[in-house]
Length: 276
Image 1 (cartoon, helix red, strand yellow):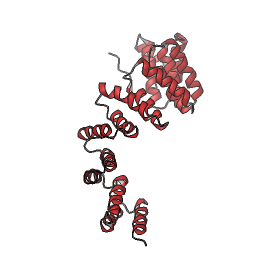
Image 2 (tube, rainbow, N blue to C red):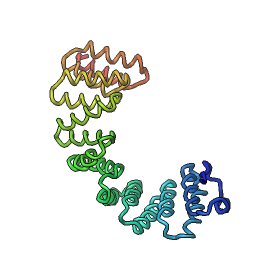
Image 3 (cartoon, helix red, strand yellow):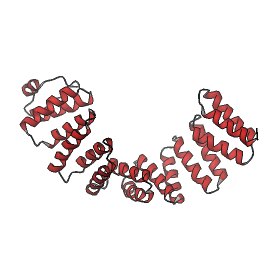
Image 4 (cartoon, rainbow, N blue to C red):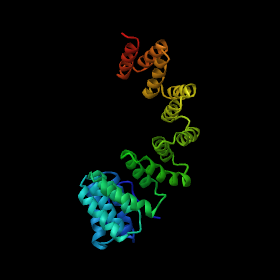
């Protein structure tokens, strides 16, 4: 079995001598060269493949990836459009086009290609998450949640998708469903402080203050430098007029992280609460 070398320094003549399937070997070496940011070698190998087979979808796709890595987004788009024309039922070129259009600051074309990619492959996780993120940014939390729910039902192991789904549910006015998602995530990834902060925020909105405090405290135990957790606990302390506890939290933060500017901001909030 031919082992592809870790360096992409071989030229096409070396490949021809070693491997009968020169196109396959050249493509593998071109991929390695691209990963090593050796664009010149990757381009030369890809060019040689395209000279043999001008409509090779893998080579055209790699050509687009090289252009993308070089930040030549219009040419990357042109290459990926050729791939899409050759394999219109494959979701991959639509996703690659979406990435290129996004880098080229064309959000409309990004969405168009993502939607087509997701239509062809509803479980294409990267495309679904990217499209849902755009919907969230545009304020359409309900559509984001709808997309993500279908994905998470089939792939409950995708923690990023589940976290995004929980956020979408919260923003679309479904705090109980969002809380369930966050709590299930916390059982799978208990060391994630951000999840516990998110749980605390929902509990606080539901006026379940002791439970919210516990969630923020858990986040702070996991990450003593978690500013969101400190901010929420200080805020709850100030609501209850417990400035002593609030000050102790800030002092603990500043002792561990003396260069963090957030501690001074929180101190100013306490001074304001005390009327100083």
